[in-house]
Every structure is written in C-alpha cells, then in structure tokens.
Amino acid sequence: MNVAIIPARGGSKRILRKNIRDFCGRPMISYAIRAAKESGVFDRIVVSTDDQEIYDVSKSLGAQVLPLRPKGLADDYTPLVPVIQHAIGCLEGADPCFDNICCVYPCVPLLAAEDLSNSLELMTDLGSESCIPVCEFISAPQRAFRINDEAKISWVHPKHRLTRTQDLEKLFYDAGAFAWATGDKWMQGDLADGVAYIMTSDRVIDIDTSEDWDRAELLYRMLKS
Image (tube, rainbow, N blue to C red; front, side):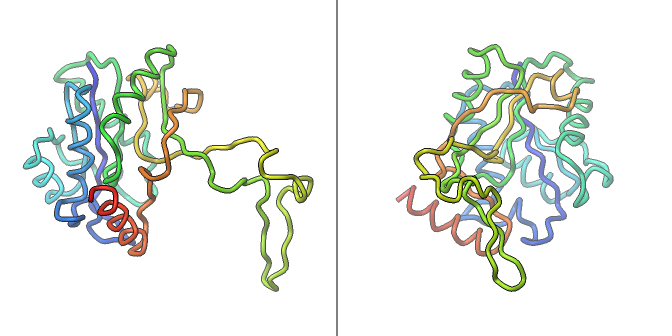
C-alpha cells in the first residue's frame, strides 16, 4: 500500500492561512491533493492538520483527514519527521500494511502528478528506501561570497574565485515538494541516504512571503495558459 500524507498546519505566520488561501481560484492545498490523486500511485491520500477549517476543506476535496493533530506537533519549531510519524501512528490502527509513504507538501501548486509517480518508480527500481526531489543550483554555490556591514566582499571558497563555472561540480538542493520513504524508514527518522529525483526549477517555488506568492501565481498562469 502506498500512502500520501499532506501535513498542513493552521498557524502559518508570514502568509496567514497559507495552506487554504485562494491560489488562482482554488484553495492552495487542493493542488497537492489533486497531484496525489492524478498520480495514480496512492491507495490513500491523507491530510494531517491541527486546524478545523483545513480539516473541513481537505475533506471536501476528497482527502481522508486524520483526527486533529496535537498543538505540540503544530508549532513554528516542529520538524517534519515527528509529524509524519504521528500520522503513521494514527493510520496503523486501521491498516498497518504500508509499503511506501510520501509526504506531499501542502503548498506545491506547480507539482506535476508524474513527479510523484516517476520518483516512486525511481526509488523502487534502484532498491532504495527513500527518495527526495532535488533541483540543480542555478548559479554555482562554490563561487558564493559574503558581504559584511561595510559592504566588503569575502569569498566563501577562495580557491574557486577564478574557477570557470563550467569547471565546477554540479550541486543540488532539496526541492521541498515531497519526500518518499518506506514506513520503517520514516519511523527511523533519517531519509538522508536515499536517492535523488531531479526536477526542473519551473515546477518548484518556495512560497514564504507575499512576493513569493505573487510570483508563484504569475508562473502558474504562464504555465497553464
């Protein structure tokens, strides 16, 4: 059995009610639920939340919603893994047989259903217990520099100051859209040794500010037009 778990707390600070705020005519969380449904790989699509309104919206969108999450697992400092572990614990009473569990982030309007199915296929084919989506850095991080209070530049890696970008190793970052792992791997709490599913940056945007939100809506409309 493959299960999607969408963690969506109600107390977002920088963008209020972010997880159910209207995004191009639909609640933000609806895009995660739709991508999970359209991927065709999940036996169950579950939302974990501490918020009654998110509970009601998610249920109306056809997701299964767990009993409201304890407030201690829904504050600004709660890591992701304990939230998924709590959700697994809630589910195990009904059906303990989980092959793979995918944490799908709630703010992923650009996520394509095939990213979920293709990443699961990659993880399975390579015999891995976990898989995360990654994007290549647009600019080489080896040539990054710091700027002090007096606007002075200092290179983070001075040895690469004169290195051509094309001669540097390609490096990647966590796209922060979803994460696959076996049930046992989630309970162990460490997904760091899994495989990487490479995504293009046009399907990934970190929405933390109102400017990010506006940019995401603009990109979404451009891609869907």
